[in-house]
Amino acid sequence: LQLDPDTPALRKLAESVKGEVFAYKMSIKEIDMQAGTVTLRVLYPDRPEDLVVKKKGEKVLNRFEVKSIMRDAVRLSDTQRKGKSGLNREFKVFTDGSVKSA
Image 1: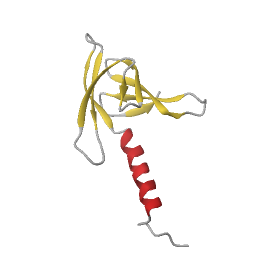
Image 2 (image 1 turned 90 degrees about the vertical axis):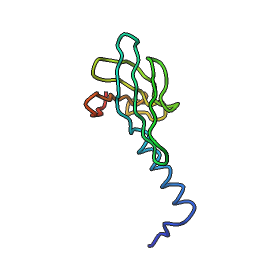
Image 3 (image 1 turned 30 degrees about the vertical axis):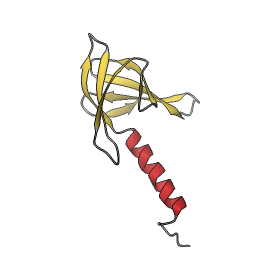
């Protein structure tokens, strides 16, 4: 069986997968504990990176809710993906660039 990678359905699927991969491409630029904010560097597949400043309860990319801001990390909840428990998938982005399941 051969698939033609240039069909509209496969192009649409490839764009969807690419978007999902890039959805999690973010890193911490700065954490301001006094202001209760985190500045995140967000990467996109088809445009320059962006810097966004968020507080607890706000969303990044209209998808990831900021659950908590710590000195060395931010905990986020993916409002579009559920974990095995049926709850929103949660993860932490650390100031060293690592990302781990919360």
